[in-house]
Length: 101
Image (cartoon, rainbow, N blue to C red; front, side, top):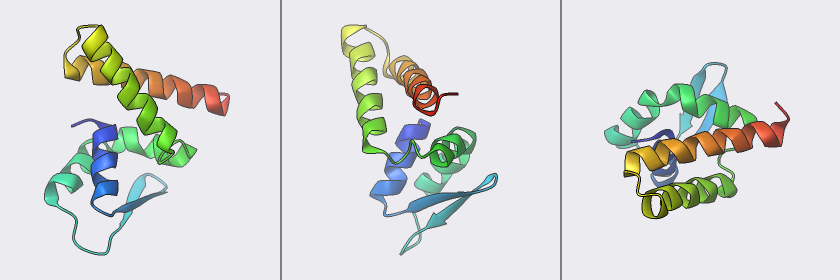
């Protein structure tokens, strides 16, 4: 699971996420699935900057990620894991560009 997939799974499970310093705050109407919690915990260090910047849950971020991953996988012949890693790098670059960092 990647950070974007962990975020997407959290949103699909009805979880709202916020940052509190170096912690993630989860708001949910019911207990989230353990697989979702595990994914969020594993990718916390990648998720925090996305939430702090306002880049996520911008729908454009997910669209950009999925588009770039699909291009790298299907047109570039990469494995899905390699394609997602490349797409993640492009999303981070876009985040930096948007925020003038």
